[in-house]
Amino acid sequence: MPVSRGDSDPDSVSRRRGSSAPASKGDWGNLRTLIAGAEIRVIATGHEVIRGTFRSVSDDALIVDQTSGEKMLPRSSVISVSLKKQSRRIGYVSIGAIAGVVTGLLVDWPPRCCYRMSSKVISTPLGALTGIVIGAAIPTVGWREMYRMR
Image (cartoon, rainbow, N blue to C red):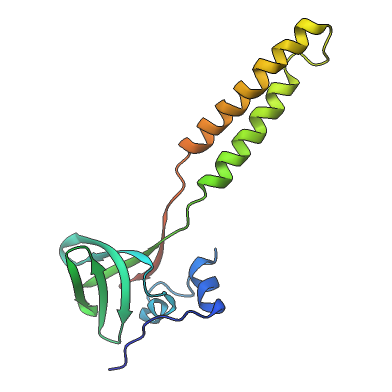
């Protein structure tokens, strides 16, 4: 029984991180595209949830590394396997900051006197800070289902 340790080639990385869904979620072969060390969540029989890092997969078993040690799960006990998606928090924070700065600059537009201009000195950084806080609060991580038992 050959064991796949995952590939480190660029195609494998793009498949793992790509936005397209696996061809068929019922295909055990989808797990061969995972890279060793990727964070996964496995739902096993009895609705047991196992989180850890992907180690390897064979035709009849999945091996997951957990803090408590290595866990081998027979294929027949695996209900689903999901891969943790990359966080997008930096992008959300950046968009929030830009939107806040633009909003702050547009307050009281056009400026009518020096008093109005001083309000921009306050509203622009305040808008940026508000945008950063909102961007940081948006949930950023999800799970992509790679396999589901038929």
